[in-house]
Image (cartoon, rainbow, N blue to C red):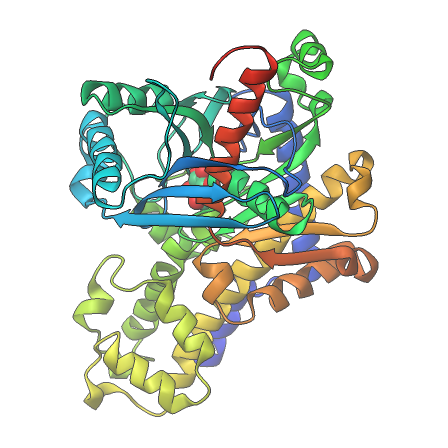
Length: 473
Ligand code: BGC
């Protein structure tokens, strides 16, 4: 097939028109509702038992752990109470063996890392008597949470696959590891990174509605009325609304939108997506995430480039070792090509990063690689917008007075931060789906360090809730 016909066949899967975006948002809203009504739905809509967002006056120092991005991070976060914080942190590498091995070994490693942090970096915390150091755990995987400090892992994502973890309480797995090693630390809060981002954005910038991650994986958390979370049951809702321990009229919900449309009813699944899914360690899962998040953008691009090479339309039909390697390059290549000002820069990236033999790179290749990267990036951005739009529409009847003028979205993650024109493209799609008036009400801001600050704020919530009930956390 000649090139123009090939690009014409591929583009509809990536350059999504307004009616397709609206259709996706409609399905999205349905899946949000289904997840709020029943357990076990694809979009899990996890109640977090975090009753609201901070106002920036919160104070305290806590340890924080962050597992689920590229590295394991151990932090100590000091909340100053004037929207500001300090953070001391250390990163620890999580090897492929740890990701795929026994959960107990992984959690032992995490506990050892906290121990190493306390020894190498040191803590400013001076607990009374024999009290343990309090820690908030940002664990960025789908967890069915039953309390602020309790939750069962539903499934691994993002390349993790440690055995004997799914179905278990991850706070218990961590606490057992601390106890086995006599590390005097108590995990008091379990927080998803999106929840952390929402808390951190609100702490620094005033009340936000949504916290979203567009990074290695993707997901969003938002504030809903507790009564909308029907699967909790009427009695539980009434108890929470009356002011049970972690409760109130509102609750943060962790959507787990990465699993949106696992049934493939509306997402534009191309042959390149099917190949990626089939070759992944979690086939038929995280359908939305696999089109949007940083872990996969390089791989979708690789699949398109290989197809063009095999059709003798690119690099004179020659590949390279990098191009032939599963996950051979990542989203950094996508961001680089998207940011390239000239074809020469793209050509340099092809030679330097993809290691294509310079003799095989023709003048027509740079624009073609740019096209492939561009359609992949464009779809990631417009789909990101559908998730935000669905929540904006879902919450419309129930929003707090804080959202009367502006609807604030805190975002974090490498795609949001480094993909050129991410926000511009998201906004373009939001305009198409929600109309200009609503799009203008939406503010989007980077909330860096959400995982650390969010975990600390989660730990503080636990401490305050315990104090309000006359007990120690
Ligand atoms: C996980 C979410 C997480 C997101 C972003 C997804 O793979 O399921 O829990 O929030 O990645 O890190």
